[in-house]
Image 1 (cartoon, rainbow, N blue to C red):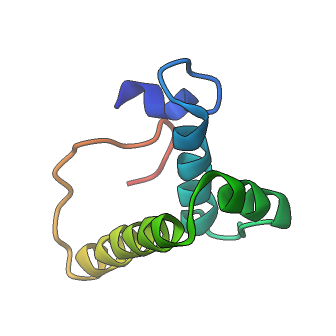
Image 2 (cartoon, rainbow, N blue to C red):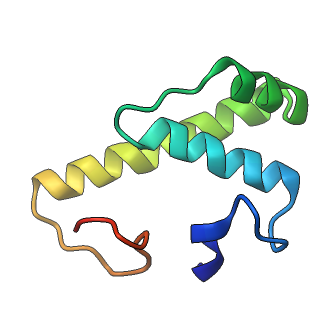
Length: 86
């Protein structure tokens, strides 16, 4: 979990894992979008079924986060990006 802050350069992640994490960031961080270059790299690295499943999983986690925040469900403290607000 600690290596997630540096996933883009960490040797602990494969190229596919880095792509998936970049995709999650692009889908999650407000004001960012999945640009054409990232989408093209994703299409090259993952088949359609895997990309749909990955997208659904990221979207589900984002929705769960919004849901829990709205209802004041406390975080379990599993991980938080350095410098991120609560």
